[in-house]
Amino acid sequence: MRLFIKILVIIVIVTFIILQFFQPEKNISTDTNGHIFNQEQIPENVKTIFKNACMDCHSNNTNYLWYHKVVPVAWMVNQHIVDGKDELNFSEWGEMDGYDKIVAIEDIRQEIERKTMPLKSYTLMHWDAKLSDEERAAVFAWLDKKGDELVNAQTE
Ligand code: HEC
Image 1 (cartoon, helix red, strand yellow):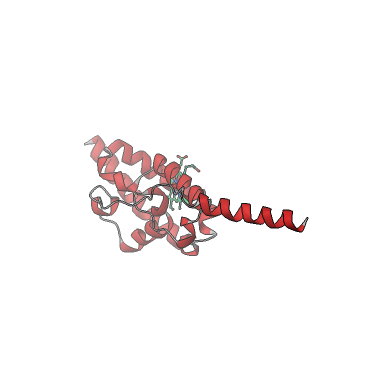
Image 2 (cartoon, rainbow, N blue to C red; image 1 turned 60 degrees about the vertical axis):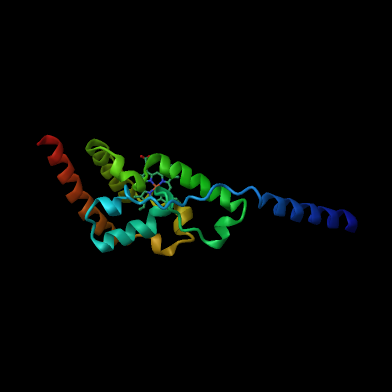
């Protein structure tokens, strides 16, 4: 019995080590031309909120912490990034047309208002991503201003 447990533990450890070689591709890019921060005038405090609470999953640059590189956490994190970017990619803001931006602004506002974004699993580990009422208000103020600008530009 003791031998069986020893063998089992060794198998688990070896499997864990082998799995580490199956790393998903890192979400890191040097092309930041189209990034919303380079496209729009955004107040610094709102930028910080987007950076701390959204960019890891909704841009082409994730700030990885050490354990994000450990499989299977690495796979889970990667899935969030792939699915998140599929819905909204702040790095591609420059390639979106006015109408897409209006829809995105609405979606972002709604997700923050409903507190469905940032994801709970994320704020659990990233405390600075938890938004206070003041932070939400600051984001809404910018979103509403930008939204109006975009709508006006469409109807001109
Ligand atoms: C841990 C990763 C992660 C973080 C952080 C995150 N998101 Fe998301 N987001 C996702 C994923 C995954 C989806 C797609 C699946 C879903 O809707 O749950 C998504 C979907 C969305 C959508 C589309 C929702 C829809 O159904 O139309 C919007 C808008 C959005 N996120 C905005 C934000 C904003 C704004 C922030 C920051 C305040 C943020 N997200 C932070 C992972 C994340």
